[in-house]
Amino acid sequence: MLPERRASLILLFATVLAAWGWIFSKEAIQGMPAFGFIGLRFILASLCILPFCFQKLKVVDRGDLTRAAGVGSVLACAILFWIFAMSVSTSLGEGAFIMSLSMLIVPPVAWLLFKQAPPRIFWFSMPIAVVGLALLSLGGVGWQLSPSQVWFLLAALFLAVHFNLNNRYAQRIPTLVLTCVQLFSTGVIATIVSLLTETWPETIAPSIWGWFALSVLVATSLRYLMQTLGQKGASAANAAIIMILEPVWTVILSVVWYHESMPAHKIAGCSLILLSLLVYRGTKPLRDLLRKRH
Image 1 (cartoon, rainbow, N blue to C red):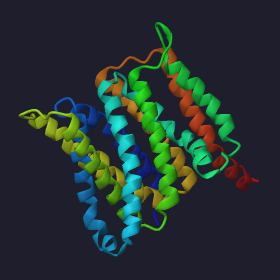
Image 2: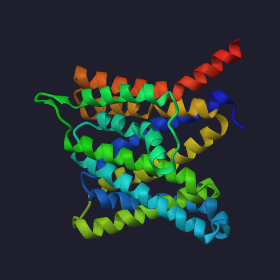
Image 3: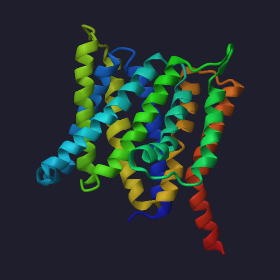
Image 4: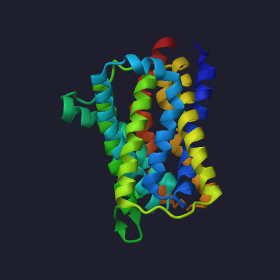
């Protein structure tokens, strides 16, 4: 078991890698079809994980694997909505904060699907997030969701559905096996969608393949391994709070890399969404800390 501080640092590094994944993906789809990019990325990422779980994969019940692939199809919808939103978005940081809302959408989805009432703190944090989203939608013509914001919201919704189904139906499957199967099924579905809807260019520049390689090796495989390693040593409460930082790093990178403008209302909106997540995921560990001190 890793010491808590070292595990927390590893998790922090994983959030930085996740933020860089937005940059790698945005650069890669400048020269290759967006859905095709996802298809190749996730299939190769699953193959990178396969050697670490091949023996366990052979003994897992086939019905469980089928259910895992089915849950992976929901993940595929989320990822396809996400990459399409990214392809039409002019603000990656804004998109990252909208995507982070998926954790706040999880409780109402669980309520609808499995009759699990949301915790009381949810009703305090969700209004803060709604106000934050409203501020992100404030433009020169008043409040209006842009197409990319709608697609990011759809992606967040499907991520919330995936989170609930994943917890409900795949508890018996080893983590690496579950991840490998879901990454592979997402890649296959994205590839099929690409073949049906996209036309590949005759040539792809080496630089684009470089961004693609970084997205596979660094932002997917290495990021997942770092996140898994960190979660083994960090408490669940600390891990949850640290993972909230991903959209913060994404905003910083998008401003530095693409010189994106962040007007005051967008900064306020992102700040409120971050506050809502801290209220939702940080209140319990804070109470636990106070109890320990007393």
